[in-house]
Length: 100
Image 1 (cartoon, one colour):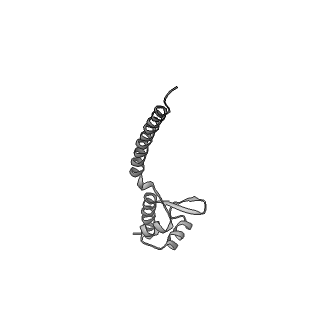
Image 2 (cartoon, rainbow, N blue to C red):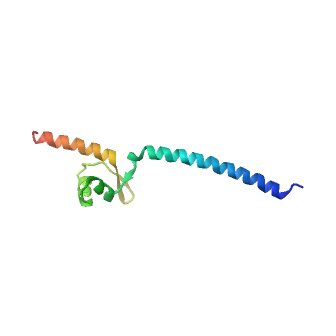
Image 3 (spheres, one colour):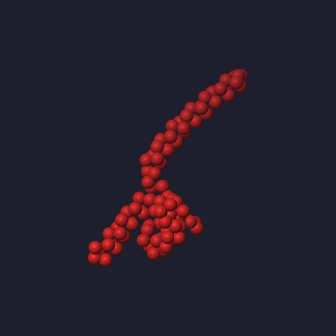
């Protein structure tokens, strides 16, 4: 009969190896997430802070389809790089309409 402590030690070594493997995979995913942080979704209040306006202004921009948004459940989310691009395009478009 095999010593139960040896069996436990083998299993613990296997578990330890698996945990180290998971840790390595998670750290590589964290690096990828950090690299694409500009694609992180932000909410109404965070976007208002980013733009320097009120959350009501963000809601008005969303309802008038001047900014792109994502809807999940009962909340709206935005990507800051898409917001920057859409507001630059709309600035140019409105300037051209006024004859500037």
